[in-house]
Amino acid sequence: RATRRRGAEAQTRAPARVSARAANAMFGLGQLRSPTWHVPIPFLTGEDRPDAALWREHLANRHRMGRELRARGVRDVPWSSFDRALGVAMTCFTFGLWIVSGAGTIAMFALGGAWTRAIVAAYAIASLFSARRFSQRVYDYCAALEVGERNGWGLIVKGDVDCAREAHIFCSHPHGLFCAGVSLNLILSRRGLDAVRARSIRLFVHSLLASVFPVVKDWLRTLGFQPCTAAHMRRALDAGLNAAIVPGGVKEVVWSGRVDRERLYLKNVFGFCKLALQTGAPLVPVYTFGESLSVGPDWLPFFESRRRLSYLLDAPIRYLSLTQRWLLPFPNGRLVTVVGAPLAVGERTENPTRRQVGELHARYCAALLELIESTKEEAGYGSQVTELV
Image (tube, rainbow, N blue to C red):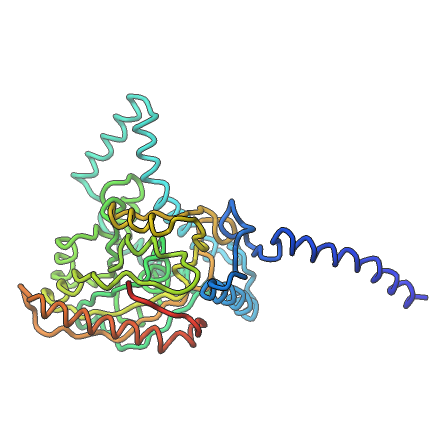
């Protein structure tokens, strides 16, 4: 009797399963990934498209991240531990400000009253004369949270980098939207800093973020982030500080979200090589697998037009969602940061020739591509194709 009852229940449930499959096929619900990707278009994830090889690999690594967390006995929720919750809150606060601070400032000036404008202006003027200083104590506390490791990300160090002996220039690729991998796996990670024998690494970001936009600039300055200008970088390296830069800059942001292959904006970027020759600081290639798709794919049309406009304005122009992992501004995916061997540049050359800069650039590009190809299997992106643009 029990067997007959189970059989009858199975027959009752069968049509429901068929209906669910039909609905998935009709509306694309089977492609929805939890937590929701890229609101407000979560159903258009598009991993079944023939040209979405990189996107499919990114999703596979997301599932791998979940399995690895479960194997460690960790629930994939921000509150699985106090330190993890604190680290996620810090990251969401930083990346949220990264996005809304500029727009908020413009909106306050455009829509606010006289008092609002006066307060914002006074804040900006005061900041010019009393810029927030780097706090080693706050930096160390944030690094101890190990946000990357606690959330399933990874770090692979292939080269012998000794920042205790001399200052290095860490060149991070790709930019993505937040430079999250290099920030949370290396710069703000005690484990990462110990691996390269560094006490701190100063990340150089867009000048608007570090000097103009309110609140976010003060927080970033506290963490040691500085405006990405030649003068600031030269000053830091001459003082013996380690520097981290993103050579692709905002022009590389528009390439994030491409689903077929990885594209790095590097062919015509030479300034970081000139800086290395002028300071004698070794160049360290750093690459983060999963960074460019960590906030989802960019399916918007007219990509070529948007790319040209982005290059012209030197500003990122791409679709952006404020909700990624857990519907929070936290990058979604398994981000694995790989640190390569440093490239020695020899003695300082105050005025390097174009030939010297070009030769170093060619060496660096070759070293970066070799680093990516030699580690992509270990990082979980075995079929990734990388192209320099």
